[in-house]
Length: 79
Image (tube, rainbow, N blue to C red; front, side):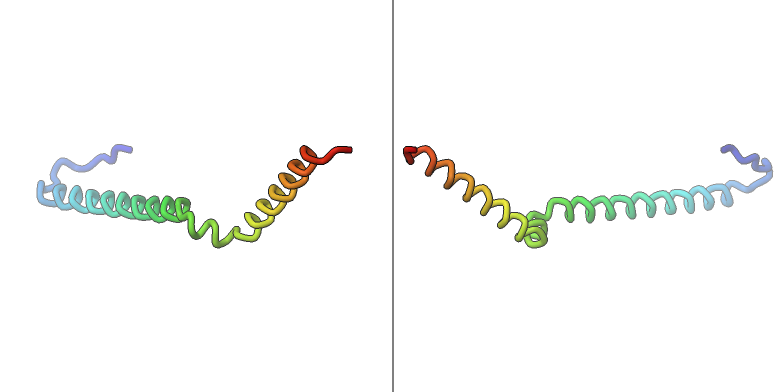
């Protein structure tokens, strides 16, 4: 991606273009970092995860408790 630039461009113009490109790159990197931080923060939010899935967790805990109760009762009952 090399663009042929005439050799008669003044150094000031080239320096200005380089500075603008650096600013654009820095802005893009900053946006990427902030979006990654937000994504990571959302993925690691345990309270939010539990808040949205509380009924599933309660149902799983109830099924496990029921199965454990039947298993324990089977151990101590004689048939």
